[in-house]
Image 1 (cartoon, rainbow, N blue to C red):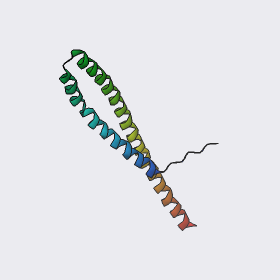
Image 2: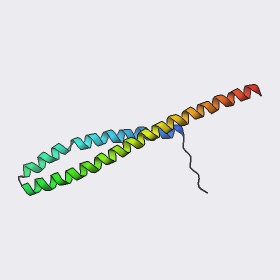
Image 3: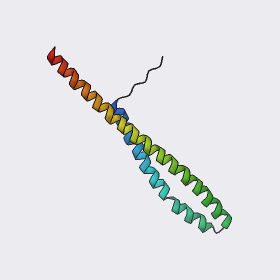
Image 4: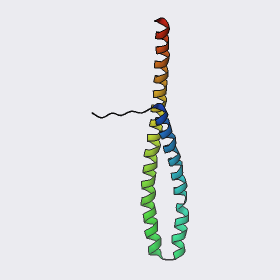
Length: 101
């Protein structure tokens, strides 16, 4: 039988790391303009067309990955906060029960 365990802190840490990676995607995507200019400097319409075609496909794929990663980061963050809320409520309830007993 397998076992899976995760803590609120781990969920929140993973969410933060993934959010940072999403921000790095923006930096990478902005470098596309430089690659377009570099291709144009070669002076060959065939090279320019090939590079622009590649960059167009690459940018589309990158935007899909970015959207998915941002969504997963948000979901992990929400789950982490929910876990923390539940853990806190259980701890408070356990404390209340101990006082009664």
